[in-house]
Amino acid sequence: MNNVLALLFFLLPVAAFSGWVLGRRRSERTSGARVNELSTSYFRGLNYLLNEQQDKAIEVFLKLADINRDTVETHLALGNLFRRRGEVDRAIRVHQHLIARPNLNQDEKTVALLELGEDYMRAGLLDRAETLFTDLVAMDALAPSALKHLIGIYQHERDWNKAIENARRLQQVTGESQGAVIAQFHCELAELARAQGAREDAYVHVADAFAVEPECVRANMIEGHLESAAGHLDAAIHAFERVAELDVDYVPEILSPLLDCYARAQHMQRAEEFLLRVTERYQGVSPVLALAKMYTTTRGEVAAVDFLNRILRQRPSVRALMALIDVSLHTASGEARENFLILRDLTRKLVEGKAMYRCTQCGFSAKAHHWQCPSCKNWGTVRPIHGVVGE
Image (cartoon, rainbow, N blue to C red; front, side, top):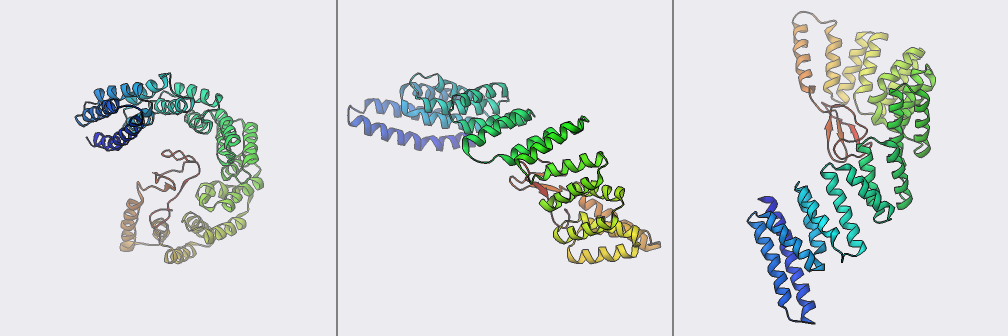
């Protein structure tokens, strides 16, 4: 009912305005008989909507589209509203009917085709949508919008080569750089090649990513993994460290493999220096926990406890508190140990099931990192959640 009322409130002013425009035009030439007929039809359609007789309402509005050229925008909006409500079949009928009209000009037909393509996408008919948008691009009609939809389709289908091709065309058409997005597509290809053991192909895709986005964080990360797997530890360390320099928010993603490379290369002093630098720049807890673990091994548990106590006073963190409890348990006994065990259970319950990442564009939350937000489909917008319970 709420959707019907929303549609009604949208169409009432449209009907009133259309009646006024038509009345003004006809008054200059003929009597208002036809204007009255059109206005009556509008309100009959609105009455059907109010009484939830939506099929009859659609028939009225579709017939009006045959009679009155000025109803094109109204019916485009009507189809759009049906699509938003999830009634994609009705939206398709509206837009197909408009496209079939012989008296539409090219611009109106193009807009209707674009809307129909969006209907197909919403209905999951991606092959039809792809064909329609490809035809629009070939006609050079509304190319930017059609190209964006094609890129969306190819991302959904994980056809990264076609996504790259159309992103480059979009860049040419609009003059707006698509380097950051194209780099992500090359990184997807690099990840796929790495998973398949095609290391040389992965290197090529990483180089392609750098070619369009020289400071691509993800490409540095993939390069670090490739160099580490090849045993090129210094190169791997350089690539991972560069990730932290380019965007410190990605430190949690590279910390484990980077520390592994430091250990294998026996560069533990360099590892400590890196962690100290990052701790000053990064407000998250991951490098703090890594330093505490390192101090436990190299300086003893007392030094680790002192370090964690100092950090907790500066930036309260449940995860840092959990680390402090774990270290303290090694030396505690009796009632003190029992109290620490209770505290550990309580702190673990605080962080269990908590999202660690959030999209800065749409607010989507997740426990793991995503390069592309599953909700809004933007790239590189999912970031660690900072705070007492988060990172």
